[in-house]
Length: 505
Image 1: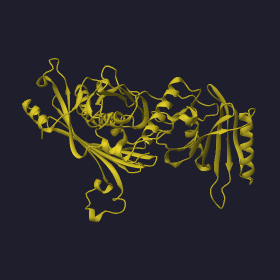
Image 2: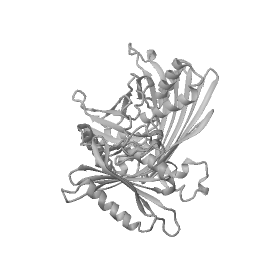
Image 3: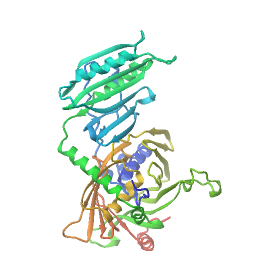
Image 4: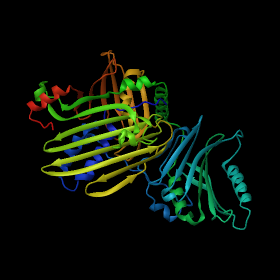
């Protein structure tokens, strides 16, 4: 994937983040009506209005496998399923799990670390040339191998269920206790096996220390019981095709493409407003403005250290976006500064979002800090009057794009993409997880010199429509609540807000 990336504006996923932060900050001190207005004001950083947001859909009821233990009922799951497109598999994982997915051609494997490092699960597909091979035969073969390996007196088959039903499929599950070698403690190896298609089997491979077996087994069985492994639907095929289109598009992007999408160290200003029926600019309602800057540089620019004190890590090349924004909603004011960084090879990223909410002399502050290395991500929320919270969003399968990429993707598509659907997975703060994002590129017949990109950053977020000219310059972004983001010269912005008696400091 090409290296240079930077974002020109805080995108819709960031809105969700702000919505969450504002909620956590002021829900105990402001009326519900005012809270809703505060969340709507957060559209200032490029998000949709809370008035148009839909509630997060909870995970479905969890069917229990036939040999589940009582402990499985107490396991809390992530709000969104992990997805392995190559297997057409959705599965809910225990809350706090970490994952890593690898792909080799058409084969994909997902490794899952359960909370507190209590056990691991690998999800993979095994293929055979024997069309008559059954699940029972596969299980027999693996059990025989494991029990032969576990040849000491402590090695044994703990349990086996040859009629494990997770509707609508029937499979097998077994556990084998393996002796520890060279004084190491005993472990348990377990597998749950289903046939997905002729000559294809999906295996959930489980390992833990024997001392942790009861709790780790509860995580494992609860998660596997949520699997959705069926024939691809039309929506599955559409999503997979759109993800491939996005990956192919990004693979073709050059350094120059990314440089053309950045502002350099120049400031770009945008205004957020609701047009008036009269069309008069003075009659429009102003809701905020933001200053955007994006450039390439060194990682050390994230710190206050002088260049003479930079180490090798500080001198790592990368790309930056910085956004300073202010929003007004009646007597509520929200000030935000967001800084995003991504390494040149796209393998690392970090971001910090600081926000202050003020009303009638009352002020609350919060900071969101995110970081990713490879497929490991952590997001920390610090609030002025509440405990710090930390989450580890799950990066699932192919198609993940960094936060920096999501900020640039609109202009990159407008400048270079053919009309069509492009999909990707990106971090969504409102869900504290990785969510599916859609970008649909159109060149309307009635306006052949304009490009329209409709963006939907999660299933529960209303779409926004961005209009670009034929050179890929942003003309406006229309939010679902009718408000508009529009580029504006700083001098004109100052004159307009002064005439309306609005704050500029």
